[in-house]
Length: 246
Image (tube, rainbow, N blue to C red; front, side, top):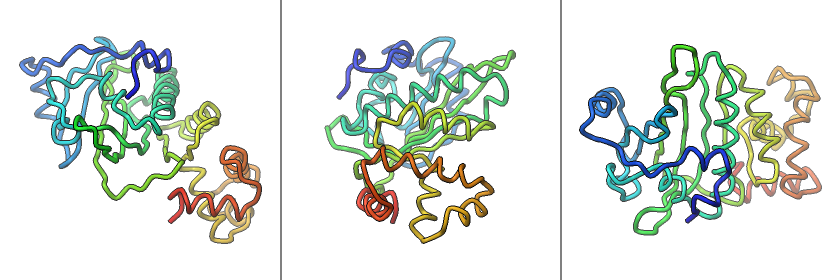
């Protein structure tokens, strides 16, 4: 379990232990509007109030009553193997999104990680964080987090993540640069790696993805250094061993 002083600076400033108010009209509006799947937990975070204002499903997924869960607990109850990357991804992605002023509702990011249940068991989850609402001036008002239990997930050394939005390529490229020190792979990189593993050439992949050859190389070559492999067969073998490729 991680503690607040171990989190990145920006993320640490956003975390509070202030509980939600389930009797508020605002909470009831969210309850009516937000649907969730079985074994899914949801929260709404207010940037203005700097706290969670809605939670649902946390007892079913991680054993915490919705009225006792807070953002610090959600963040800190992360498998230590996944925590450093998860925290840095959240930190860098939120800062990137908040730097934008247009089409904010289209931005989101996702990743896979194990969270720690209140009973200390590990729970594999697919996690997606997105912008839920914006202010009149277009700035972010609220964010929504969705944590879906997926017991079919298999984890190796590498965490899988993705970025979405109007400036998706810039978003993911920025995350790739910021998170290079971690064992992680983006959806764009994984897509190219899948084609490479099937024997396609750089030229063929470029045609399929409507990219330049250098655009394809930009997605595959950094993986050699990141995963400390020295050949394409080694990279593909590493990807299979770590459940990046089936």
